[in-house]
Length: 222
Length: 223
Image 1: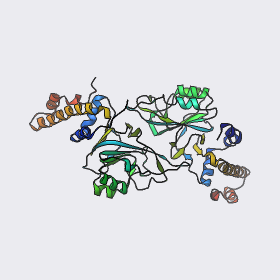
Image 2: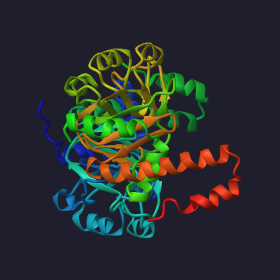
Image 3: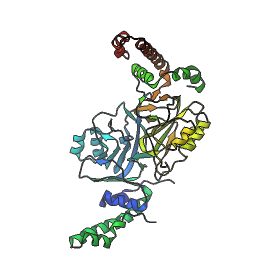
């Protein structure tokens, strides 16, 4: 199956929803999408975009560099860096942060760690990672491939998949499921809003949840 | 390096050396080659061989073209080691009894996994050495998949290329680049001989302080 990268008109629709609601929608559809262990570096920022993927490998007898891939990333993309969960060397820092801001890149998701956190915070550029550290990845890791299938927090990410990030973390929506996920997330979001409205209006939580089917919202549907 | 050349020139010498001797030699030569925390799941096996590598990634919408491990076994030659990179994930399986049975039948020396295995009892019955970080009962199906084989991988902190030489024992694993083989082996043999001589002196009644001074043990790895 050949995949076509989703256009901005579809991607933009995800901006209205939290990662929480999207994750519940993915559960409903039986899709693994929550990137376990990946957290925001900057709080209060939202990220939505299509994946540009990069895979790293350890250096050794075979040498390489940490890459200049950023020149090929399009505005609206999310840079997805698979450093196989390594927390002992960084693959993102100040120069890339500034460059991404200039290019209009939506954010960066790392199965690994980043450095130059003061600049990232100052720029309020969305970075999601396993943590922060300062030692460089140069001569420790190198780019093995770009625009290939990668793994982030044990979730598969392909070029063009949609990534959504907020203060709760990052979820991945497979590109061919975008419309279906949007359909389901709308119903979940509506139900949750209705429950909040109902309890504010004096209904007990049990009554409100029962009325809007809260406990079944994430249950897998056939 | 040709398998025949490796077997004739190096296999016997490597079999006599422990991973600790080889790790010290790698330190002396200045190569990062020791893999920490990947240990035999049963017994006290000693394995020596050239790597046939496998790389694992998350399962998802994109499906793997082949069942994990089978191509690596198909291309492996007698004496080789299968080496699997699953990024240290101890919650997912990447090796079991069918693969052990097939690998053993081909004369593969063993499997080394940066991750977990299952059917360990069956593997022991086959007398097929399995080195890993852990054991799980669950299947790999739908959870992880093969991304590639005979490719560049990472084992612990160490890069492994197809054809790199690995030695494994109860203490762990070392990876030796073939282009540095002579240098590493020469250094390891000197270290082993020195340690054997030290043990002999101690057993013959010489005081440990005397022995330490005689052999200059602390400075042994200095260049």
